[in-house]
Image 1 (cartoon, rainbow, N blue to C red):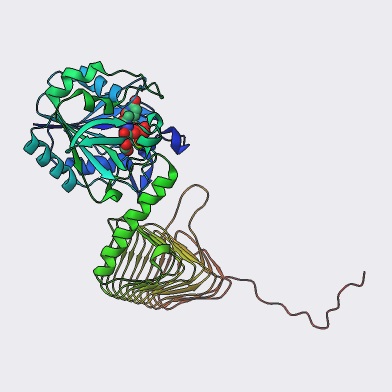
Image 2 (cartoon, rainbow, N blue to C red; image 1 turned 60 degrees about the vertical axis):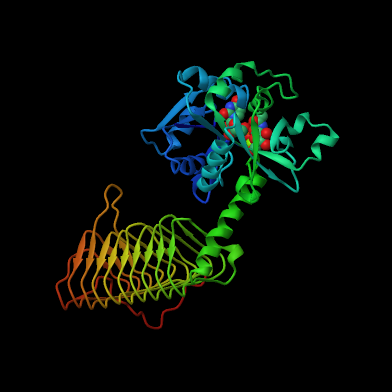
Length: 449
Ligand code: UD1
Ligand code: MG
């Protein structure tokens, strides 16, 4: 039987934040959720999350399942105290209890599985994940003899000699729960921080083993925002390397960020300062960037997107977007269409080969095949209370600076005169023009003042 406890009650003072530390995000996912995701893969019988500081926010952030339970620790008197509170609230202390700090977000489930195997093979009271760090500052130092741990000394309690020890505690423990229950209430807070340390349980048990792991990036704990950014870089490097090996070119990878969920096809070229977020899919042979932000969007093959922002939309094959376009949620841009400079499109469907090349706002609209939207065209979709629809048929030519006052329906092959304010529907093949006639006053002289 495997029970998991994740410690997430602390404030995270060193983050200097109004938000609990475990709610800070790495590549879009909270630190806590990352630890939970790794633990879920072990199929434990139960996962207890110890919450305290801003507990409601922390609970609300978690993706729930039947195995997840919350334990309230208040006040927060240290990591050992957190496990004392858990032990009191859970009556049966059977099998293994794996305890993880909620601020070790890169831990892989494979490593946790290896820890369990190691723990079983040693019949240990506790097995602790350790690693050697070039700069161990901030971590508890682990002192061993033949892989058996004699003690852990926290940074603040180390003397000069002890602080030179490079073997550190990663904050991930596999306990024999029965052995732990016998000593958990014996912990004292006679240390510099006056806290009840979970690390003090180790020297109170006989068979305390060090399970040393080589890749210490995976074990990076996050106590401040420098470490947060280091972990972000670690994740991003892995994501981009995976895509490069899979056939994606990054011109300047360091300046780009890609979400873990995004899918990118073959021979896609990602130019500098491009960010692909959420659940996006970029298909083969696209060229994205420089300077583009794409979120929750599907981009089909052979598209070019430059200097543009796109949210939650579908872009079909051979579409060109940008520079400086903004595609807002719920747009569908059909094949071979072209969206150009300073164009904003929202909640609209554009059929094949539509052109909106310059300075337009198209909102809540449907535009038919081969239609050209002239520079400066605006769909006036909002009357101050409600939003209305604009329909434009195929093969139409909307003149420059046309304002289409929605709700409005223009048929196929309609032309509008430049500068028109169109308020009435137009049938197929008509010319709609609504502007005052030009008056020329000849030999007109300015008043002399
Ligand atoms: C802890 C370890 C240290 C180890 C390091 C690894 C202790 C005493 N020290 O130090 O040996 O090298 O992690 O990253 O355990 N928490 C609670 N309740 C509390 C206090 C903390 O749930 O009362 C939670 C925090 O929210 C956090 C985790 O426990 O997720 C660890 O606390 P933190 O203050 O970050 O411990 P470290 O100083 O990093
Ligand atoms: Mg920590």
